[in-house]
Image 1 (cartoon, one colour):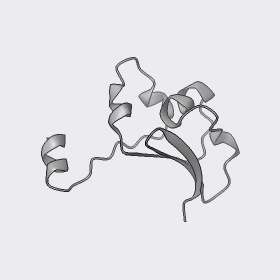
Image 2 (cartoon, helix red, strand yellow; image 1 turned 60 degrees about the horizontal axis):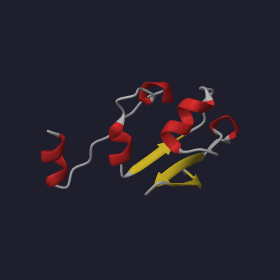
Image 3 (cartoon, one colour; image 1 turned 120 degrees about the vertical axis):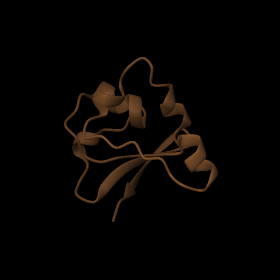
Length: 80
């Protein structure tokens, strides 16, 4: 179903309140994600690094800031 939606120009979104949801060993789907955005969280740094990348500290983000990962590079951006 995901491939059909993407082939028609749609988007598939995986949304979670905790990076721990994506920290399993079978998470090869993270390599196929085009855009990853992460907002402030108090989750363990290891789980956040798995999703966004090493060096991204999600605990110190201010309101309106997020980390976004494009093509394996992480950048701090203003979300609104």
